[in-house]
Length: 172
Image 1 (cartoon, rainbow, N blue to C red):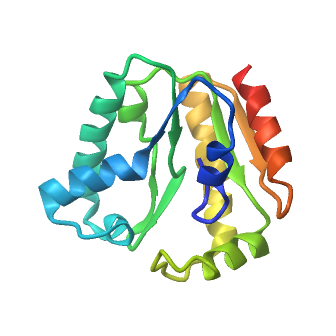
Image 2: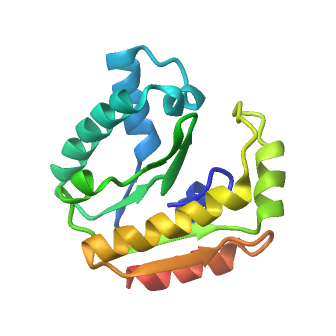
């Protein structure tokens, strides 16, 4: 899990693992396009919360049927117009067997720079410091709820190999 721009997907793409990496946002986009007519990824979090909850439940039901070991690439806390929304609500976490919870983050200025340099997204300006703090709070709650250990990995600029190695260690 982590902030948009922290490098979650980048770290996961470098892993040497037999786990299946599943991008939660891709699954949510499929559901929300079909069910609610959402056009793109940057519009998903702007749906009314009740619709987001409905889509989340559908995605978690799909995830719970997966038989192989899965790494879920997702957001810890989603910054919606109505406030921060859990990316892993307890109702949905109950459906999954969670072995570990990993938050991939980066220094605030690095995240801001990565976001500014990403031409593929239309991101709203948000308070990165607050979002990162909310992620850490939600991570602690998810860990307490599931009993799974919580790990925070910093994906520092030009230190991708170090972040990947730390995640590899978690998977052992």
